[in-house]
Image (cartoon, rainbow, N blue to C red):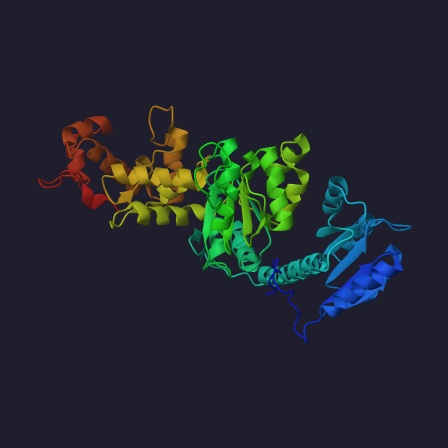
Length: 478
């Protein structure tokens, strides 16, 4: 798989047998020929077009791995060209160039579907770096299509567990992008396992031998997060008695996981954007930039698109982070994953005992709303184990979030009958199970159980629930 080009590293020249074709679109002939020569010197193949219409004609006849286009041209603009390429060649990454660089034009370009943008005049390495990343994106998309066609039907990947189609798609996506250096934005409700996805991405890729540093963006006061991320020099502020390395430097060569990125202040968002653009940091109080090689994986439980619209989150940072989006559906939308997750939590908290869930217990878990997702499910299983009377957990052993405020965690009569129907119990089997449960609740006191059941005590004996040593009719439990 293609690897992204790292800053301050020699630019990779592709192997001769690999065709890397770039289309350069610019009405300025000198600029067009200069870019073509730069790309060819780096070992790529390049062709030119003087305007958008000529570029579209080239794309109809040839397949290109990337397109580099000026924004302002006679006729159609580069941004209009992006829209047409996305319709005809949706997998082709487009890099836009402009001598009128601004945040607005950059955001407009990214919203149109451009892969990246460069401001003229640009340095040779900046162009080759952007083209290298475009090649990587192209390779990733092609491989992702292949993986989706032949997705492995496994129910786990690393520490992640899931049998639902949604989780299998996430497994396939992680396999595709784990070797990439591109930024990843993981979105999902609290408790869905966003950090677990980030860890799996890191340890499945080439950076697995380097640090994985998780940072909760809400864990530090506004005045300290900059120092935590970028470090500080001695005397930078009151209390800075020594020079301190920041978390970016601690993660050198590895991955920095920025959790709850949506809660980062606009000021810090601006500084993070600069790091993503320049691959350099400057410690608080310092006067020199330091190059870094860190992959950024961010996560949020917020709707960042809405936050961008409301001005709470920067557009340009959103597009820089959202190169590879991964969305984790809530657990209530993945009922097929609940039995697997529950079994994993039983093993985790069972202290070596052989705990299991009855079919009605599993059905009850699958019907719950799980506002807290997998984290909430784990809490329910841990509590059930702590109070369990046997290793076989029944619906009554599960104190679900939906039970809070109710007088009892027992299922209602309708739910009880639904469970019996799902198990296809005969009337005799249903009677026996209910009698068994009543005897358990009375600690084997048959006189009291008969009174609750509204039957004569002799009927219990005739039904096989008698005997001097039979205190709770356990033999009847299937």
